[in-house]
Length: 394
Ligand SMILES: Cc1ncc(COP(=O)(O)O)c(C=O)c1O
Figure 1: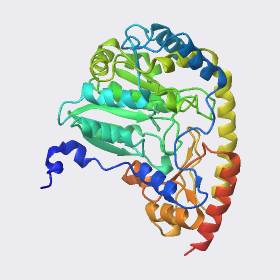
Figure 2: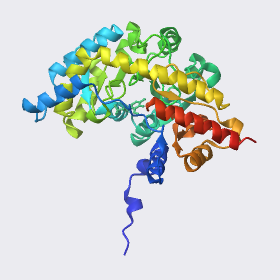
Figure 3: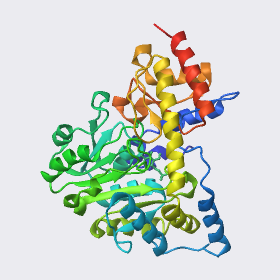
Figure 4: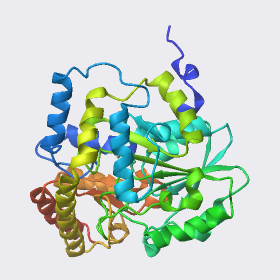
């Protein structure tokens, strides 16, 4: 007798396909021999020592229990001061900041606390794979706005405007962008602000995970900086990317207390609190690690230039990324689909990258290459990509 598992699993869960990033990551792991992986969004740097030391000391000092549900007050104060220093915006650490398990939990909490079945959520693609999935898990309806290389992958105000309906609950924006590396300046955001001012009921979820990795001027630019939107912008942020702290699993939500409170309710029941040790490490990161972040940003910026040149030499068109640690070249000239390109490159040259359509349909014809890898690996991979494109010239 076989148990009918399928009928037991929620339809919402069944309908969401597995992440295509994972598929390529697993394929690369199964390959025999050395594979150069430029496939994952994970800094290759070791977490700066002073941050690791703070984590060690937290254990020595006995911080091995639950913390308050929203996080230790010292950690929330440190995060609030960090946001003020970098963004010039003040959030009350007691009521407007919630420490989460990575930015990932923040995305999920927003979806679960805001969406009623059938509500529409505008998702700007190509984007991080969790945006659409979290909306679908919460029985919302993602409405896709596609960004384009000819607009430098920026969100265009008229395209946002035309996606808004009376069912729109919120819009998710993620800049600096994964996977394109696009950034929005404050002037770009001002145009989006103007659209939102015409629609006073719409909430904004602004994913700022890569806020420190902005190579235009190193400063975050964000909708949170417009006072007139303050009552309805929620910032999702965290330490994974900019501080090379993916394994610490610390993120945070910052926003008006009326929107943080319902997210806190879910977090309190379902998660209890973010890891205590990691929260203590974050006090150090948010307070004393600006120099370390700058060093990593400079190194990424150097690699970014090398990768852009490498792609050019390989004959692939690539929009110039100014943020995060990804390049998103167009591979249409090879005649291959994104999946085909990535599969063949992996099998023939042992280089792992991710098909662009993993980040939305409009990513078809593109691939995501991460430069969160050593310069040596990046240079070797670019040589192999060049050979590969030449061997497959039509
Ligand atoms: C744009 C973006 N947001 C959020 C996350 C989640 O990060 P974490 O949960 O590690 O903080 C990622 C991870 O890849 C990301 O790329």
